[in-house]
Image (tube, rainbow, N blue to C red; front, side, top):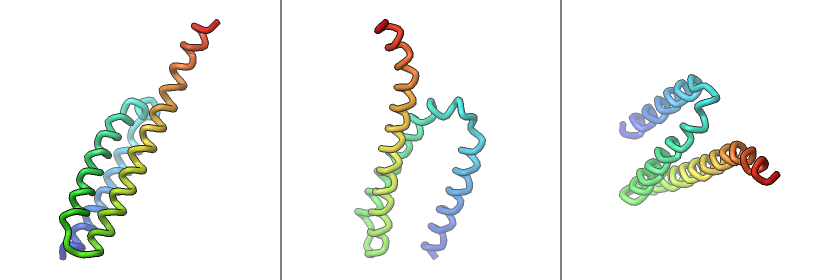
Length: 98
């Protein structure tokens, strides 16, 4: 029963997340990236708690997978944000260098 509930929440999160992301205009993606990284950091903490306080092997494996995926999400988000901010700051540095 609990597995069915967790699966329902997971699928609901996928649908809601897809709807929210598709409605954001491209000009807002950069400012929202830092907020999304903070939320993903909270996801890592939740995944660590799930992996630590579970009693079954399958639940611990799912917790470890959740930690790995959330970490990839945070690192990738920071890399994308840094790259996009570098695109904006390079114009100013090129003008100052001339």
